[in-house]
Image (cartoon, rainbow, N blue to C red):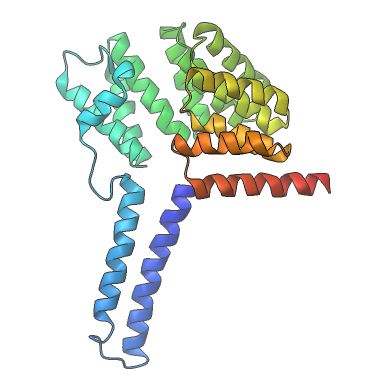
Length: 276
């Protein structure tokens, strides 16, 4: 959501710059060459920032081979005999990372419907459901996960991801059941513990949130959403030492410092309002 807001702000700034330039020429009769260089430089800077936000690469697209490495587990044994379809799936994954979810859904939906091998169906279905989730199309994503679970009933990732979608549709009890099933099937799946921590955090049940967030970090120390929850909770509990510890951990794992500061301030303000 924050990424979309920043993209919109930059786009509006670009429009404002152009509008001001045109206004100066047409209304104030300023020679078009007077501010042209400044406008070009400013627009170029904004365009570069916009490209970096959209692609995450400063305008340069990530090679498909990079996603082969990142999603090695999910892509293992997928479309091994159909290189063209494997390339299509990798392209969809790249679209997903670029925030182009509609394109990602178009490709993965076609692969999901037309594939015959179980591994191919499950991989394309997983990335389809993830893209649908990013678009807030939770009910459609849940339907996909239900199909995947019927094909691979012992995969904790499907239950964990479906639990998130259920939580977003206000089905908290069903979401918790999914998370617990995910943990039962895959006790070392850190994201499931993090999802439970998020659920309890949002309910204000901090002791439970702390326990699950710490378990997630035991398994995957770089999972910064979990360390973020802990930083916020310990800040609200006025435990400065622990708040500092987990803030540092979150930032070291990739959380943007300003973003973390804003998150903490938001919950401090909300907490103080409730207390008042």
